[in-house]
Length: 113
Length: 114
Image 1 (cartoon, rainbow over the protein chains, first blue to last red):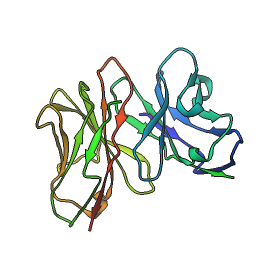
Image 2 (image 1 turned 60 degrees about the vertical axis):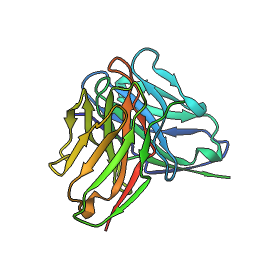
Image 3 (image 1 turned 30 degrees about the horizontal axis):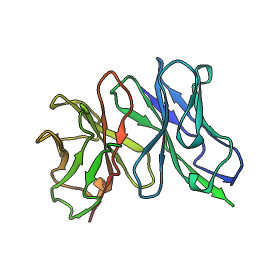
């Protein structure tokens, strides 16, 4: 069965600093990997996804993520954080197209000015 | 840009009452999903629906839950007799077709059971 671990519950970074949110997954085959963002009271917005090919994927809002099979990781990065990036970030894995998503517990990002 | 919509945004109900949560998936999407997020917890899969039948369901999705696509646009989740522990945010999602990829989520319905 698939599982996702986001080891950091909360992260605080200064505005303008770089960001890396960690995600480790467990799945026997090549997974479909996603990062979603949720602002307070809002739904889930897709930031980026990985299915195959280039292991470095670019998303919206300047985010990128790198799939590392050897480490079973799919960490999210941003070179310079903006105050508007404060939100909760969820990593998710799917076994195949159309399959259910299994989410991590989420990481709450706080941005200090 | 097309989006998934959900109504109501917030529903308050008494324990034991039936509730129906409504979703309008993106048109021409064929797969539909319900997830829930209890406050402070992770998003959990409930059920997926394709071709007018359930394709997969989780252990959470017991006999108290049902889903339906009553017409060409709506997708509903019914909870027959709500419990306090059903209080959560319920998200609907849809996917365009089996050969593509991303699940698009609606804004959610916050269900509060008193």
